[in-house]
Image (cartoon, rainbow over all chains, first blue to last red):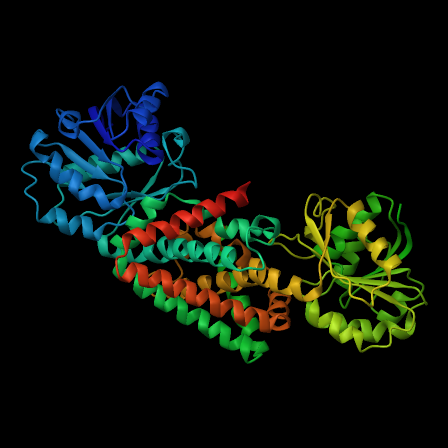
Length: 287
Length: 287
């Protein structure tokens, strides 16, 4: 079984906190140091038993760690890794949980990791809540975790991170970073952008202004649940996966324009066919 | 308390069946005749205790009814009412549960109702399942039901239908048909069209083709739940509320285009602001 005696988690929120709770329960994690910018949330993490110790100083916090988990918004992952490098022991494994992978891998390829070994990861898990208060050890149970090894990835480090995610209940799948970013751009980042846009659009209509909650029975709650996700996290994802997302938004706008045309032309047979197809596909998602 | 001794329900599916179960439980409905086109589902409705009797013949089925509930897809409501008129007793109340109201009211205004009294209704309730097997008496509990009286609506008939929905647990609100159609075009019909379009768009991407279920963890299931709704019902809604829906789709496309521009221009502050606004609004929906 994989085992890390000294772990540093940078960003002890929903994902970082849940991984700490889960891996400790499985006996995979020993002493956990939490690193962040605010004493308040780190104190809370400590009192909840998520971490053993905390530090506001990145260089001090990662010292002697065998494993560093970077669980921050995507936009600061590479700058944080760059900053921590001088303090890492040789052989330290660094992993992340960012929702966008290719840009991180490309930037890290240009850094002298000097003995540290990076493995890119993305657990497909989350709730509309964020922060360490929302963390729970079963968050990853039965969920997928994507690892995105490149030719530079150390096989032993990859195997260790693979085992870690397996131990906390996730099904690990591997793919290259670019494939990952397109697929999750499509099935996750695009729907989030559409939900953000819809909630704002509806709220700005003078007919419903301020009354959205009053009329949200007809499926709107389900549809827009993801619009309550963490804003900084999602801003970073949208900007980091910009190129895929723009392509996907354009394709989606075209698809809606086509549906609009069917409605406008009162093309009843083709409109019905399109809705029927959607229902069939959707039912396979429910399982 | 309102009480109907003889009721005819045209279209005994999720909504018609649930209303029958709920109103009977409350002692509001006496003898219920189900009317439909297929013996199979009417037999099932009878064996489930939803109706007492059924008929495949509309004119025979509505004879002597004090109340006729038309719970069919929107597109056939007016033709069915037109067809049943010769068989109705004077004073019969007709109500419907259609999701679009103004076109129905306009068409009925041109019919000689000769003593029958129409009250337009729209219970804001439903699940992604359809058919009488999915019916249950608590479907309307705590949900809203919109009634859309016009100047032609008989006040006593309106009061009776108001009481009926109250008795089955719904909170009744009234508004004119055009306001109803714009608001529910925005909060219900538009999100459905967007979900239909998204599911089809994603499924047609070669990178995810056939594998959508594999990657649907990141919020996609919630977002697309409504895409599994009944196709004929939704085709009819889209076509009946066409004019509002086209206006709303155009507004939404513009809103997404604006978000696309913020991403494309890497306008981080305004993108964050937009996502934050969306989260704040969405949180008021969760309550």
